[in-house]
Image 1: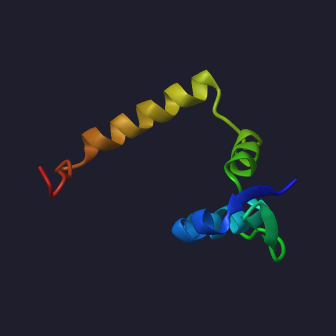
Image 2: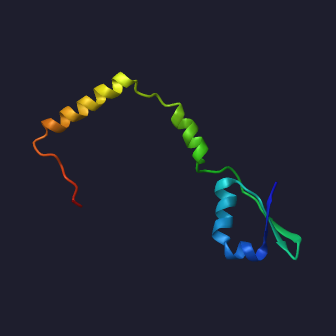
Image 3: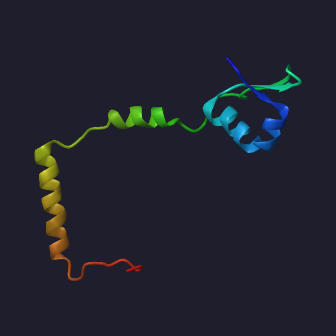
Length: 92
């Protein structure tokens, strides 16, 4: 179902309207005087993944067990201590 917005509202928020149509795949009915005068629809597949799609992919990645995470943290700390000079931020 298309969202309905006035032509004036669409003109004032044109970039947002176009982004919603393209990135969210929403359709927009534009009205003037209560009559639908145009419809904006996505042209094809959305190229950028949605946040939900990214999260779904993230959940399928392998995770470290508690023991593996502790071993990794120990290795990182060992590496830090073995460095001659711990790098500092240029902003500090």
